[in-house]
Image (cartoon, rainbow, N blue to C red; front, side, top):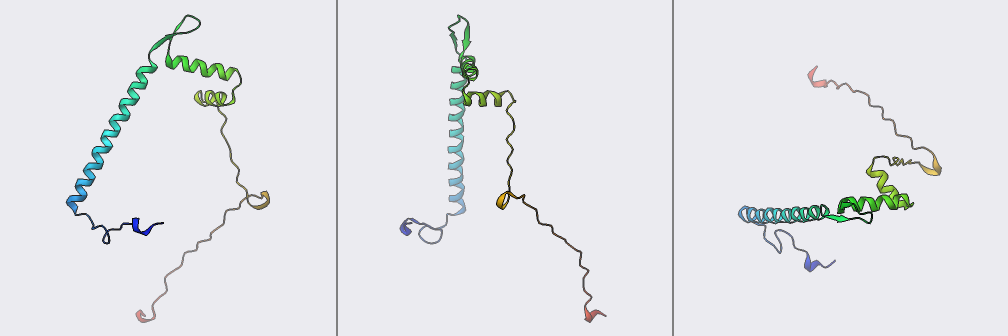
Amino acid sequence: MNNQNLKRWGKEIPKPTSEQAKINGQKGGLTRAKNAKEYERACDIIKRFLDKEIKGSDGNLYNYKEAGLLKLVNKFVGGDPKATELVLKMIGEMPSEKTEITGANGTPIVAPVLNILPVSPKKDDRTT
């Protein structure tokens, strides 16, 4: 670690004033909004592309989304393990994964038992 690169408030860098902090926060918010718009636009372009139609080898018209799913199902039927896992997850038939946690030598882990007993307050000798 290079200590020359470390900068801390009150040492190398003065703590920003509340006005400067407000300006910096506003810059961050504007950047976040810009990035969100770019992401939304990219998603819109992908969705429009997936809706384009193509002619399949069987002569039928499919959009790219349908064509991709058909290709996935063909791999599933062909025995591709990753395609099988994905298809089963998509249709909700993937068996749930169970994980068993054991202690040393495969013995079950026993949860500790805590006995909490109420304690009555002691009477102060000065108040009697």
